[in-house]
Image (cartoon, rainbow, N blue to C red; front, side, top):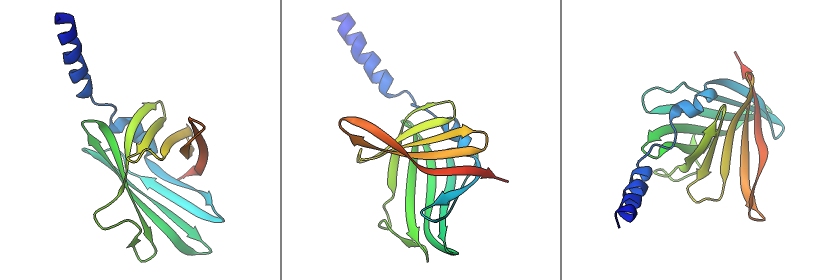
Length: 158
């Protein structure tokens, strides 16, 4: 019986362990630019400060903004959580006022971090493939396996 009680305590303690930190995604820091859908895409993230990292993505086609994304990665007891809001030009929110897309941290390794959307429909990998290249990969479940594609490929800009 003592062994079983110890297993319960160990399982409860394991749930309280932080599953990652903002330092696992500090490789995002900087300005990045690439092409997407016939236009440019630019992204920028800050270094971790306190309990957060903030950033944005701006998509431009034919000299006009097509979409803005604002990010806040916040440290929680479960690990980093990404909150994302999308806006059309004029800062017209695509999500409701009090709603953001939320992605929960799953795991990280050097220069790579995996997040999963709250509704478990999408996974995102942030991957710095070299000092000057950052890739955001989107994954969807297909045939009981996560399949990822390069969604955005960025090069560092000064």
